[in-house]
Structure formats: C-alpha cells, structure tokens
Image 1 (cartoon, rainbow, N blue to C red):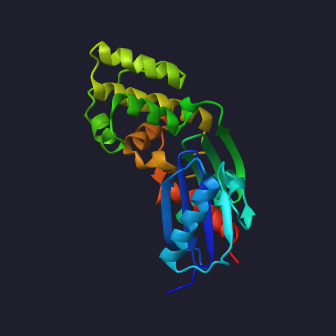
Image 2 (tube, rainbow, N blue to C red):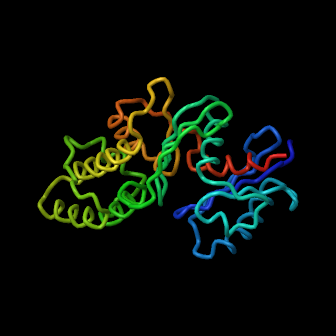
Length: 255
C-alpha cells in the first residue's frame, strides 16, 4: 500500500472536508463533517481521525483552503479558486469550466492544462446565489435533501419563485404553500431560480470547453439538471464533488 504523501483540508461555511493522497495524487482516504464553530479544535480532532484511518505520519504536509483556512495549522494556505481548479483537473484530466456551488459562495472557474486558473467569477455577497438558498428554504418546507430530486422530477410544472433575496423567497414560498400550490412545483421553481442566478454568473461559457460541477449542491441531481437547462449545456459532475477543494489543497503541498 502506498504511503500518504499529503493531506488537504477545505474548511467551508457548511462542511469541513479533508483528503489524504499518495505521491501520485490518488485519494487514500477522506472525511466530510459539518463545520463546527470552533474550527481550530475540529481540525485537530478530525485530522487525527483521518491520519489514523489512512496510517499517515504526523509530519505529512497539510494544505488548507476555504474560508476558514487561516484557522488551520497547515504547511501552506491556498486560495479556493486555485485549489478547486487544480482538484477539478486532477479528477477530470482535461481543461474546462468548473461551477462550484458551495454553502457561502458560488465560483465559476475556467482552467487550463494542469489546473492553471485562466479566469473566474465569484458570488460571495448574497446567499440567494449559493447552496444556502436551497438549504434555508428546504428546511422551512421540511423537505429532506435526499428526496428533493425525486420531488422535482414529479412536478408537472414549475411554480415561479420571483424573490431575489433568500429571506424574502422564504416568505414567498410560505405564501405559495398556503395558497395551495403543489410542493413539487414550488421545489422545481426554487431550483430554476437558483439555476438562473448561477447561469448569469457563468455568463457565456466557451462552447469548446467541457462544463463541470462541484460542491455539495452537485449531489442534488435536480440542481444539476436545472442548471444544465439554464445554460443550455450538459454538465459533468466531478467525482466526489465535495472533495475537489481539499484535493487541490493536498496537491498544493505534495512533495
């Protein structure tokens, strides 16, 4: 069995992710947890768990990324844009455009050979264009993330959700439910609303580049489909989409 050569940690607003890789960049183990308010303590505890899982030595270098990267005792802290581009290239093996919908922000990154960043756009000012938008309203509707894709697929038509603010959209959805609108249609409308915002951020995606998707929202097949429809393009979900940033962070300190 190969030895662990590097560990990458991606501290997001919603989840804490880490991967351990060997000298060839192959993932040997991973860990995904909800982000704890005490990030420094969580990181010490969770890295110990990951090291035990994969048999990693204490001196293995650690790369950190995400909004909480400065709270990680790491060999090197690297920006999210750089790590996501590098991680996506490592997974997909070719240049492309990556759309990463996280809990706090949404990133659109165009990258070339080796995962070199060529251009990017980012929304980190409003929750309405991020995974938090769905998280808040699905919670209000008491709909589990596991069942939302099937519910959206059953919708005869979308019920438009026009509010551009998460707080106002939550109130609008409550009103739609009270008015007797079908839940499946409301859910489709929510997904289409988020897809429209993300597509606007992406702008005109170069047609000669494949389109990839990462982040926890990429696990939601309904969102993948609605975003593909909004862009008029097929989207490829990166394998283990939540781990793309952590993989890039590990590769950044690979020696």
